[in-house]
Each structure stands twice: as C-alpha cells, then as structure tokens.
Length: 359
Image 1: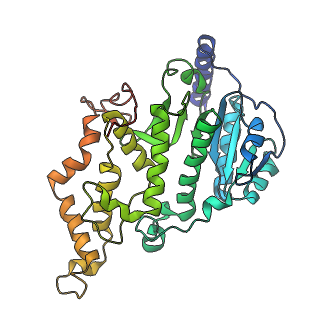
Image 2 (image 1 turned 90 degrees about the vertical axis):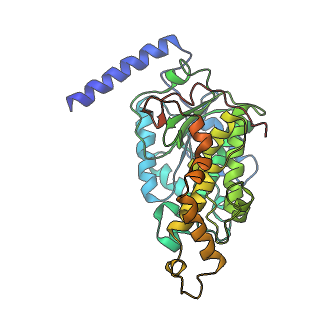
Image 3 (image 1 turned 60 degrees about the horizontal axis):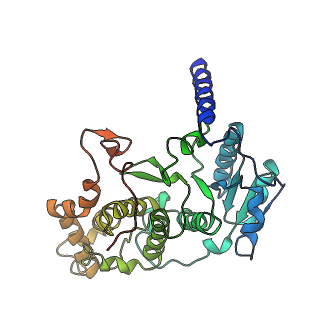
C-alpha cells in the first residue's frame, strides 16, 4: 500500500532528523550478544548474568511472553523492533519451555523465566476468582500473575540494575524508533506513558533516570505494593476511606492499570488516593455481579452480609456524592477544553511533577 510505504519513509526521515539533534542512536544492540542466554530468576545471579545479552548500555526493553499465542505476538514485536534497529530486548516468561520455544526462531534474544511467580496461591476474592466465577477471560489467573511479576521485575531492572526500561505489551506495533523522542524533547521526564483512560496505560511506557528515593521510584514501588496488597489481602479494602461498608467476598481491585492511575493521581496531588481505581470499583463490581437472590426481598439469604454489601454498593453507585468523592482526585488533575489522548484537556498530567505524597 503506497500510503503505508510513504508513512514509513516519512517516519524514518523524521527519526533520522531527531537522532541528529539528540543523544539517541539509530541502533541499539546488546552489549554482549549471545545465543540462548537465559535462566531462572530465582537462581542467584541470573539477572546480572543474562543482562549483558539484553541491555545496550543503560537501555533495555522488557516484554512478557506466555503461551503459544503470546509467543507468536511477542516474536512479531521482536522482529518489528529489530527492523527499526532496536535489538536490546529481555523476554520474561513463566517457565523455561516458553523461552526454549522462542529460541527455536529467535536464538539471540535473551529470555528469563520464574515459575515461582506463577505458583502463589491467591486468597478468594471477586477479582482473583472473576474468570472462574463469571467467565471473564481478562481475569485469567496466568495473566494476573504476569501483571504482578513484570512490575516486580521492572523495579529490579530500574532500581537495582540502574537501567532505563521500555516496558512493552506484546499486542503493539512500533512504526518508528522512539528513542529520539525519549532522549530529545522528553529527556527531562522520568516516566513516559502511552495515554489511556483516564491518564496512562500500564503496559506501554518508558522509565529513564529513576533512582531510589526519587518521585519516580516511589511511583513504581507504590504500584507494586498496591497490587500485592489487594491481591493477597483483599479484606484490606475495608481500611480505605470509602469502602468500610464492603463485606466478603470483596472485589479488591488489584488491576495494574487501575492502581497505576490512582498512584499517578496520588503523586500529583500529594495525598494517597485509592478512590477511583479501587474504591469505585468495589461498589460497581459487587453490585454488578451480586447473586440474583440478593435482590429478592423474600429470599432466605436476602439479609446476608454479602447481599447487604451488594445493595450498599448499588446504592453508592447511584449517589452523586459518592461519584464525586471517588473521582475527586482524578478530576482535579484534568484541564478543560475537551478530550486529548485520554486526559481531558490533553496536558493535565504531563506538565506536573511527580513526587511521593506527604500523607
């Protein structure tokens, strides 16, 4: 298609022009390329041993691959990035067999695995059990484990190894080398996210120049802490300002993107908030998926704690005050003048400084 070829040529020219005026490079290759470089992250020294085959100086790209389907998508993205001169890739998989499969076609891509990250028994909650209870495939237990594990690995790469990380989902296509943007107009920014609802996407973003004790480090560590908290202590949702009414089974939203956006809001307003990503969804999910008998006044279990909690959630969803309270922090960060990239006004978050909340 001529338009696609023209667009690719245009982006290539733009990339070359940006490279000429920034500290970026057209190509990023591993410091010490090697075939079948990998290992179990639970084994001492694995990450430090494998990284030279993945990193290019202080830069590395992180991509997770699971089963056969994601292997195909992941391989496609690896080849896509390689065609742009970007070969500094670290793959993360649940088990060695996945890396062995990748190496059959991409032997020079570094790949690590960590079966223990997928073996933890999660306590009962509507979030942890959503696929089994409601058939919601987006709550696939393996996917939920991936979300947790990749963010922990990200913190290791950034804070322990001192690297800048391009964090990637497998289902993306990259049309041009992004590093001239990262190292040029966006060089002063530590955290650069793909826009999404309401602010940022938790799968595609870049982290640079983040050191321990900085606002960026707080954001990454706080995100991990929240995911762990609501995954393994769902009852702790009752400790939040707007969720003391919730009774088991709790939803306790541990979704990485919902929590990321609450953490971003917390950093920007200087006060921890869980309201829109966790507390609002506590009411919404419990009301949406409550057993049918909870709505029948004559049912024997109508007065059970579960049913009372579900009706409380529905009542709160219909309350303008509750809506305002749970979305106050995010709305305070949104500028006027229409939508722009998932953030009303288009620049409400990007011009602010991220810092650890004071309370």
